[in-house]
Image (cartoon, rainbow, N blue to C red; front, side, top):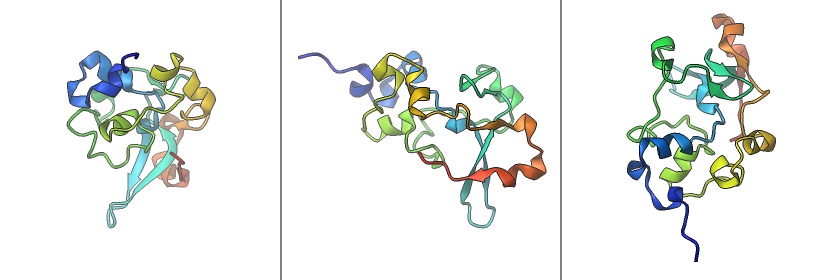
Length: 147
């Protein structure tokens, strides 16, 4: 009997930094500009991405320096993954934390980082950078994402 892959045998807390980082599916949905209703605390998603997101690769253009450049960039980590309600249902961290399997298109399952894009699970071709949207117009970009 073949042994199970490490992501099926380890909790998020047991993963080393390399494993933690490789778990990210690269969908970039956490890089969307989100708006919160001050009265209801409801989160609204937009089709506007962070200024650092390369919308073709769905990767951060300055991952290591992102917190110095983008004030409200939230560092996803083992302590907050279960508290960030705005993470998509398909988020690999959220799935593993809940004891669920990774999607069939995940690069750890397929061995191919392009599979997620081919499946349509990433933001590739679906967003515009906040560099091209005036702050006053962000509300015009509210949409409903299907996880």
